[in-house]
Every structure is written in structure tokens, then in C-alpha cells.
Amino acid sequence: MPPLALASILMIASGSLHAVVNAIVKGGKDKASGRAITDGTSALILLPATLLVPLPHGAWGWLAASAVIHGFYLYALIRAYSIGDLSSVYPVLRGSAPLLTAGVTLGLLGEHATAAQIAGVAVIGVAMSAMIAGRHIGREALVWALLTGACIAAYTVVDAIGVRAAPTPASYIVWVFVQMGAVVVVMFGTLSKGAIFAAARRQWRPGVIAGILSILTYGMALYAFSLGPTAPLAALRETGMVTALVISILILREPVTRGRIIGVLGILAGAALILVG
Image 1 (tube, rainbow, N blue to C red):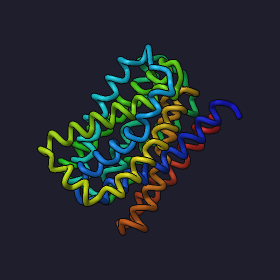
Image 2 (tube, rainbow, N blue to C red; image 1 turned 90 degrees about the vertical axis):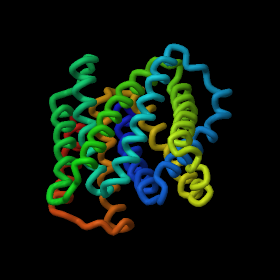
Image 3 (tube, rainbow, N blue to C red; image 1 turned 120 degrees about the vertical axis):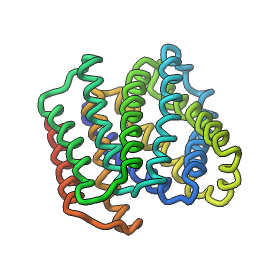
């Protein structure tokens, strides 16, 4: 299978799993605790693997930057989900990210993408933002969602560069999860003055499930970035919004709007442009 085709498949699968992880975090009573369990679980599972992969020489700086950005990202994400609905917040934060990512990678880093791929990225970004048409999203929730989208674009670019700089993709993947888990647990533990650990005892099961799925979803994304251009692949991950829509309707019982249906069709059209490009 051609590398770019494999990368595209991995990104689409990654997007679907990512929507599941976000629904689990959104569904928890204490979202900070749920996120700490999620990332702590991922770190503990992969900690022994640090003995099996090469040290990520050449990528330590990117790993450090990734840890800091992920910390800001998760704080902004929790704030956004604490204020707004999944169906309103998720399209904004995920829709803004591919546009920002494309601007950085194509404009500043000089990555190449075809005209069809660039058009596909734009269509996905606009379509996801259109999914909130007809729905109310408060100013504060919107601000936190946009900040989250900016963080997503930032860590996407950093990790795409880092995974290519490491000796092997596996080396970067293992270390990014281990350090991210440590940062998140310490950060939320400190901000909550230890309260998340008491809450964790009441909701550890969904957090552990989300932690296992997180390894799969972001591990697949990072490996895909080692195979192809960042912007179109990052945009393909947003096809997970289709899964998020199904979850929000069937499980979270959130209403369907015309804008959401049009948005999903737009995402699929954008994905088709990227795949044929």
C-alpha cells in the first residue's frame, strides 16, 4: 500500500476514535479528573515501552514544546466543555484547527500540497464551523473553543516535525504519551489542590477506557504524519466529526439541526477532495 494511502486510512480511523474519547471526557462529571485518568493511563501503559524504543535524540526539544502546548490545550478543552455543549464546542475547536495548521505548514514550513488537497482542507474547516449554525454558543465557550483550536494546530505542527526528527516514529509516540501523562496529572492535580484524585476513584473506568483509546487515536495520527504532508492529513482527522455527530444524537441526546447535516456532508466532500488530490 502506498504510504500516503496508509496515512489517510490511519487519519480517518484516528478521527473516529478521537470523537469517542472526547465524548467520554465530556460525559464525565469531573472533566479534569477524567482527563487526568485518561492521560495518566496512557502514560502508565507505555512507560515500559521506553525501554524498548530508541531514545528520541533530535526530538527532545519538540517533545518539550509538545508537552507545554498539550497542557494549555487540555486546560482550554476542559474549560470549553464545562461551559458549552459537545455539538457546539467540538465543531469550532476542530474546525479552526485544520485551517490554522494549513496556514503554518504551507505558508511557513514550505510543505507541498495539491490544489485539490488545499481546497479539501478549506472545505472541511468551513463545514465544521457551519455545524453550529442555528445553535447558541456563548461568548466564553466560543473563546475557549477557539483557543483550543489554536492549541490543536500548534501541537499538530510540533508533533508532525518531532515524529520525523526522532530515530523512529515509535520512539516519539511512546515518549510523547509518557511525558504528556506526567504533565497532565501534575497540572490538574495542582490546579485542583488534589481534588481530582478523590474524583478519580469514582470515575476511573471510563477514564481508563479513554486512555487506551487515546494511545490508538493519537498514535495512529503521529505515525501518519511520518508518512505524508501535515495539512491534508490533519484535516482528514476531522472526519471524526461524523462519529461525534452520531454520538451526540444517539448517546448524549443532543438535537439535530440542518446546519449539522450540511456540515457533515461538507466534511465528507472535503475529505473526498483530499483523497483524490
